[in-house]
Length: 367
Image (cartoon, rainbow, N blue to C red; front, side):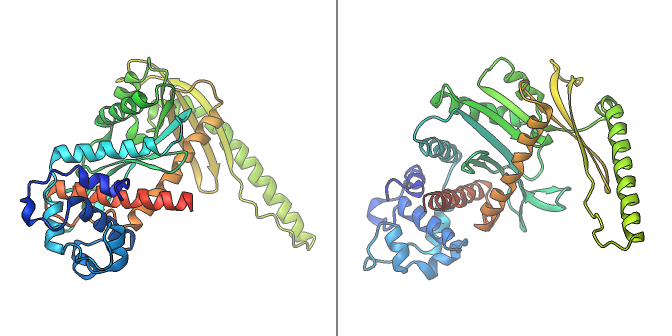
C-alpha cells in the first residue's frame, strides 16, 4: 500500500493532530477516498455508508475485522486542511509518478494540453462565469501524454482566465522539470489555438528539445495568404460535384440503381511563413483548406517543426482529438464535482479524482 499514488499523496499532508487522538492516518484516509471514487462513490458523505466495507478496508491496509474507516466529518476536515505548499508538492508528485511509469526515458513526449469546465452551483471561491459554457465554473487544465494517454498533471484554475497569457509559464516549468529527468528527450506541446503563446514560442526558440504544434486563430492576413488556393479548391469541388451529378442523372435515365452517393470532400494543405505583430520571429504555419457540401473550412496551426510536409504535420496535430476522450474518462470518475466552498479544497478534490484516474489507467494497461 505504501507504494500507491494515494498513499504517497497522504504522506505529503502535514499532520498536526495530537497522536493520542488519531485513529485514522492521512495516508489511510486518502486511500479510502480514492478507493471510493474508483467504485463510483464520489461524495465524502459516502464514507459513512462504506466505512465498514471489507474490500475497502483491505485496500487501505486494514483487515476486515479491524475497526471501521473514517466517517464523513473526518474526511471533510482532511479536504479542508490542505494548504498551497502541499498542493504544490502533490502536483510535483503527479509528474514524478508519470516519469516513474516508464522503464527508460522515451525519445519523444507529446504534451497534450486542454481545459474543460467543472460547473459550480454555489458560492465556491474563485468560481467565475464563463460565457462560452454559459455557466459558473472552474476551468481545470489537464496535461496528458499524447502517445500513451497517461495523465501527467491536473491543474485547477478559475473559470475565466486568458490561457495564452499563462500557458508559457506553466508549460515552461513542466518541460524544464521533465528535461531535468530526461535530458535527451524531445518534448512537444500540442494544443488548440488557446495555447498558441508567443511567449512560449520565444522561450522555445533556441531549445532543441522543445517543440510546439498548436492551433492558430485565423485573421484577415492569413485568409489573404491562402485566398488563391482556396478558390482553386472550391473550383475543384464544384467540378467534381457537377460530374457526380451528371453521372447519377445518366444512371437514373438508364434505370440503374448503383447511384453514387459518395460525400465529396476536397482537402488541400499548404505551408506558410507568418509573423504576427506581437511575434519577434516568423513561424511556420500550416493551413488546411477543406471544401464540402457544408461549405469551406480553413484551419491554421503553427509549429516549430520544419522537416515534415504540411499534410503530415497537420495530421499529427489532429491526433490531439483523442485527448477529449481521456477528459471524458476523467469526468466519468466525477472529477468535475466541485462541492467544497474553499478553492484549495476543490483543488485537492481534483487531485483525488486524478489519482483514481491514474490507478484505473494503469489497471487497464496492465490488465
